[in-house]
Image (cartoon, rainbow, N blue to C red; front, side, top):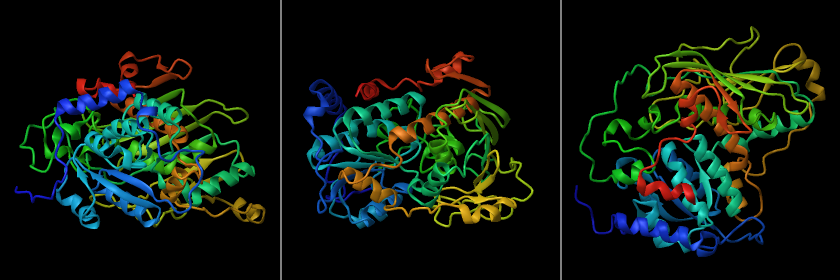
Length: 477
C-alpha cells in the first residue's frame, strides 16, 4: 500500500523513545510535569472549547467522536488509531482532514500533550486501561467507552487515578444521562422503587462467537500495512496477528473482550446498580454455561450475582441471561418489551430489538417493574400501575446528554454522571461475572480483603494477565 506524503503527518516513534517517555513521565511526577488545563473546581468558562484527542476513530469510536463534536463544546485536536487509514477510519479522517494523526497514543501525548485537555477512548476493551491511565496521569480528562477496563485490578487503578489526578472521567454508558437515569433516581428517592430483592437482566441477541469453537488462538497472518500491531496489543499478552481479532471480533476472546455481559450489562442494569447501591457481589454463580471454552465466551450463560444487604436495603440477587436460546423467565403480564429506539447499532449485525430485545425485570416488595436498555424508562406491571399513576413524582429532564455532560464536567460546570467512581464498582461486579464464566465455577468474594476466597485460579485472574515488559509502567502511573 502506498501512502501519500501527508497521510500520516506523524510517524511512529521508536520503541526506545516510547519507553523513555514513560520512564521520564514516571520519574518527573506527572502532576507537575503536565499540569491540566482544565480541572474540577477551575473557574468555569462559557466560551472555551475543550481540546479533545481521540484514541480510536473507527466503528463505535467514530460515533463517539461525532457526538462529542456535535455538542459544539469540543475542538478535535488529534486523531489516533493503530489501524490508521483502514476503511473503518475513513469517515473521521475525511471529517477532520487537517487534524494531526498518530498510530501510537504515547507518541501523541509526547508530541501534543500541552495542546490536549481531554481524551476519548473508543478502542477495544483491553486497551482502555493504558490510554486512560496515561491521560489521567498527565492531567487529561477521559471519556472512556464501557467497560472501563479489562480486569478487576485495572478498574481499581482507574478509579484511584481519577481521584488522585482530580480529572473528569466518564464511562460511555450514555443511557446514564437520559430519561432512565432520572426516573430511577427519582423513584428511589420517592420510595416507589424500594425493598428490591430480585432483578432479571438479559441480552439474547446473536453474538460474534455464537456457533464458533476454538481449541487454540488463531494462526499467524500477514499484518496489514495500515496496522501497528504491537501498539494494538498494548498491555495484552502477545499474540500473532489474525484478522479474527479485529474490528469487534476481539470481543469474543477472554484476552481482549468482556463478552455479552461486559458489553451490555452497563446499559441494562447500570441505574439499578447505582441507585440500589449494589456495589460488589459476595457471590457469583454460573447456574448455566453452554459451550464453555478457555478461549472464547460461552454460547449461553446464566449468572447469579448475590449482593448483601446495604443499610436498610435487603439482600438482592441479580440473574443475568445471555445466549440466543437462553431466554429468561418473565412475568405472565410482561406485555410488550421496552425498547430504546436510540440504541447505537453494532459495527456488524443488528441488535434483535423485535424478537428478543435486551431488558430487565425488577422485583420489589410491592411492585414489579419492566425495563429495556440504555435510556429507556421503566414501566410498572399489573393493576398497581393505574393505582399509583397519580402518585408518581415529577421526573426532571436531563440538562445534558452524556457527551455534553462530560465536556461540561471538563469545564467545571457539571459532574460526570457515570464517573469512574460510579462506574468502577459496576464494572468490577461484571469482571467477577466474567471470571466466573471463564473458570466455570461459583465464586465467593471478600470485599474487605479484595479476594476470591474459594478458587485460587479465579483469584489470580482478578489481576489480569501480566503485562509485557514495555507496558509494566502503566500499572504504576
